[in-house]
Image (tube, rainbow, N blue to C red; front, top):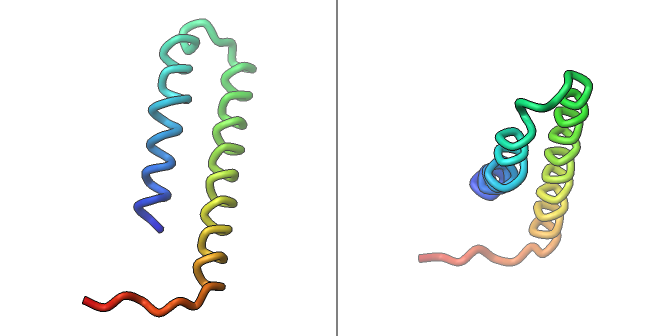
Length: 68
């Protein structure tokens, strides 16, 4: 799950936050920067919620692990 979490974080950084910062960063006032920081926190919380849900689903299935 940690790799999935890292991939999602990288995705949001690459697709949303980095381009947004490159385009708008020099133009933003401090208040706008605070809003973007809060938005980043909310996206990370959404990712955490998704990951927690996936973990719960996997734990609930109780399927035997594949052996080599």
